[in-house]
Image 1 (cartoon, rainbow, N blue to C red):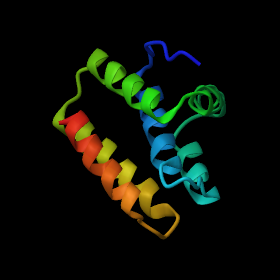
Image 2 (cartoon, rainbow, N blue to C red):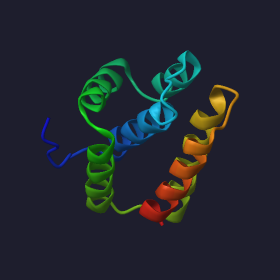
Image 3 (cartoon, rainbow, N blue to C red):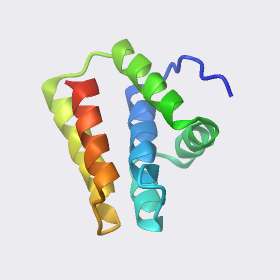
Length: 111
């Protein structure tokens, strides 16, 4: 599927990023998905999840970079997003090398 530029709100972008965090180790755990669902409403989660499932990994990064550039983030907002990403990584009680790598990638994209 061709990745078109996403026009998401900050909340929608956060859910998309958190879904990538959950899936990056190749296993979406129930704990990770439950945590992400708790951060948004049912309709938003399902819409973003459906879009996420149709995207390939490289396309995910492109869409995230495009969407980040549409918004201005305060340092506090970036810190909160980073904390939520780490929360997803740790929710399944394991932090694998791919997740550590993704954390560094997002540091480069966000800061």
